Length: 173
Image (tube, rainbow, N blue to C red; front, top):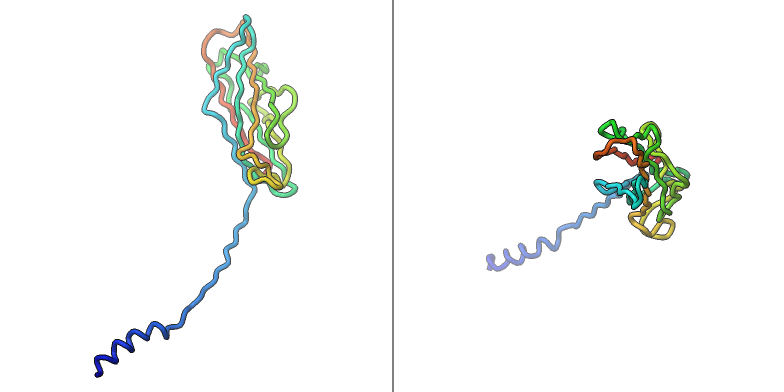
């Protein structure tokens, strides 16, 4: 008879155990943030007429979240001159660009000269701006703008392949 009571007591033990509950509050502080991306390379192509300028279209994609009252700018600057050094010259203003309308924000206006010493604005964004999600944000994710690049085709520049590194920056976050 004692053997029959032991299983009943063992089975009822978990039913008498107390249940503990714990709570935790998670807090996060979302910071202003930006990301810009461009293709790995771009070849400028000469126009159909002799000594026509070399041109190319560079797509620029970006994602952004700015704080209220703090806008942001996406800029471009060359991080060096054309190489090799006997080619086109940024100092002489040989490389310029215009911007297509941006899918979000305000694209640059007029002709801009690519520089080694100065950043040139590509897109300006207001405070409390964000990409994706709609509502107060742009529904476009990522947002984009195109740079229409133009290189002067100077007959005094020797033939050959020349490269210039461009650096895009999201600033003033």
